[in-house]
Length: 138
Image 1 (cartoon, rainbow, N blue to C red):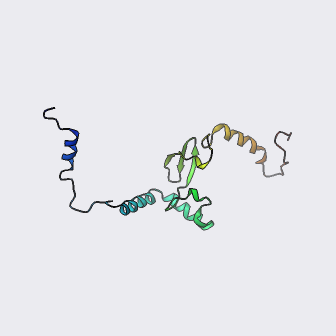
Image 2 (cartoon, one colour):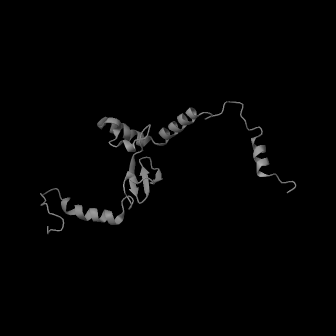
Image 3 (cartoon, rainbow, N blue to C red):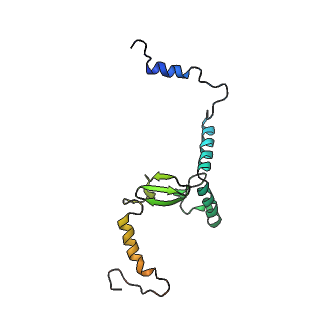
């Protein structure tokens, strides 16, 4: 290994002269938090706008405190399987499952088809609909 530098030598060499003459950015927790908060706000303008609209209709702009994140919650506009998309077009993997037993994920095609079949006869709003019990003839 003559002539080769070890990883620790390479790391030490890369640190030499790497200390800037100015104060480090995020050198303390509060600075790091403020920078992360601003990056979140900048990254999600549509969610912020929707949150502001929601605040006009309900206190805090949200009916469920478990879904609120400071400075504002993301507005999820679509879900499919284990994936979610927010109003700003970002895709996420839903590892939380909406705090429910959503073992089938979001918009599972079999469940969605069953819901559509159940609602279809009652979506004709131009005339009164006869209510029926599940399993009884229409």
